[in-house]
Picture: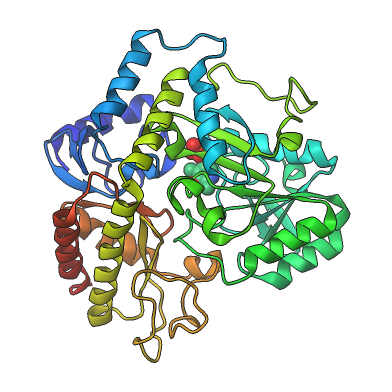
Length: 448
Ligand SMILES: *Cc1c(COP(=O)(O)O)cnc(C)c1O
């Protein structure tokens, strides 16, 4: 950090709420660094400091900061034709075809402008399609800044988790802990006839990274089928990240009714989408009765960036590369923790990673997952690794933030600034970045 970021933050505090346009960006203390530019896997701040970037825009930047020539060229020629029109374009159809070809549960889509808008629209669609009001969500699941899901459990009821939301909204949302079969069974026993759907991140990606225990999504699928509710996978963060072009649903072997997308599918530009079988998605207006509309939806520049990014990923073996780099990172981190902090858990999958400051040391480590917690029942960590949002909440956030995060930044490594949001390896990183990060990780962990 330095004087230019300090000065920019001072100006920002006068004209932007809290100095930022998304709350989490204000979190680093005493002030955030302002970004000058991205370069490959790095970002450079306003004072010329360079960091290896694993925040990657909080998810959208699969390819890193430099778009490959082919992607950048396509985006630039789209911009040159004029930014947008308010009439349909071919590229919207092409991106929809690409997604429908690669994600098995998706036949028809509606593009929107953010992950939040996607989940808002999916919830409205589920309610409209089923004629029911209640949605089931997971504690610690994140579905953007929307009224129906910014909720928390308060004893037997659900209440808004932020001011500005009438409690009546929260009454239509039922919260259950992730990975808890009995809790969700109970909710369906009690409210089954009123439940429009379950909205769930297939892997909790905004809460430390928690993978499902074996059979959990099968339980959700069965309950939805038995009660005529829709299973909605929020793949805004996992989509085109976990499971490659098939998304997380392709590796979890559960077929949702609806899927929400965002982040990567827009290639770094604002995007969201809802996809599923035609007979459900066609319930959106103009064919159906569920109103959905947007001035910028299907924006040609975004659609081009998304399409060319995904085509590039397919043609160039991007997933093999990013996943193996992240594997190297997670395994290295696991080795470091074994020496210095065996109570901590490395979590993550494919190109996602995080260290969770869990508190209990398992009795032995030999049979533990060696590249990120997989929720294997025969793993020696199984009893102590995080299973739900409550487990993540119990981890030590002050030590994470003030010591670990700050010292990693001092080492030139930019991580998400709290225990919750996950981190990403990009196609622009290389083995050298990973090994330097591991060396920094060892220096920091050995002194925590
Ligand atoms: C990021 C995210 C959202 C919100 O997307 P925005 O584009 O920030 O509105 C919703 N759901 C999940 C799972 C996310 O990770």
